[in-house]
Image 1: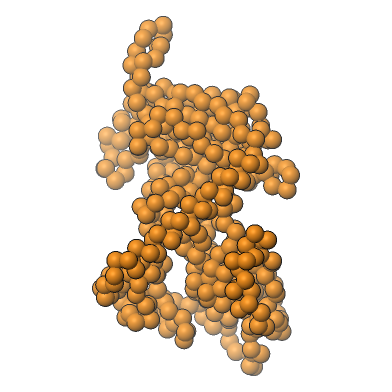
Image 2: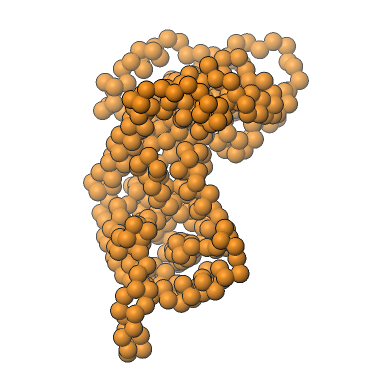
Length: 412
């Protein structure tokens, strides 16, 4: 038996609101399956299940706000015998500074927690749910994008007819719905932006308060890398071409192999090295704010795979379709503002990570080449790292390796 809990989707998440269950007691679930939709201050997140089994009980109700780590459901692993129904465990206490705001929630939760009704005689295990099966009573089957659009337009999903698989409500069904007043449509995006700014501010304040930053900055000659990339892209369609950011990400990820102390987290008073190089990439959202979807095992991806993963994650972030696995377990973050003309970025570490890399724009600049003055494409790179884990010498070696790889793009 195992409890499925409210996941932590970053240091700036302290609680989440359950918007929808995608499973019911008795359902079989597979690793990676979407089981719930959770609303955070930054975005709606599809929550994945990290083990296979059978759903024995749902502890949380739709609309309930719970802190990170609170039990949401109980899973029975394959081969385990069913457990007798029990009362759901109480969620962890809300942090002190939030107790006043959470008072209505605690009052609503004062009633005994729901427990599954005693099961009748054992029946054959249900077959895995398919998209064409009817949705259980009381649950509205709708895509995350449809839910977001409905909130922005002030529409009641229960009043809409779904045209998706199994009657699911999709975005187009919402777009065909009745219009609402502009003030109602604008209120939800405004609340989301304000909540996101609060979450970002809290994380950055914690970072500057707790992490002893040190900064290193340098510049890299990108002439050889860009020439190699142009030649490589000539034989590819526009959709298949890699962008310069892919070179920068690839060089960063592969350089981390020689600087493992920059890839991990500082937790419980010590450094915990990551079990892989998972690079979070900062993405600006259309409605304002930021997200940092993760490129998992980035050092093992080819340049084409890295470019595809970056494009997919950026699109998912901007469409509000991120999953819990897309925004968790980053071991380092990369931010780039080069497309906005910024030359140098001085980023702030995202706790509990211990380093962040910033890239500016690639622009022509005068440089010395073999004793002669030349104009070459140059990018400015900045490393911010945690002095509790590494020092300037280690950081300098990491940056030198990034520069070496950009000078030998065939190794990327």
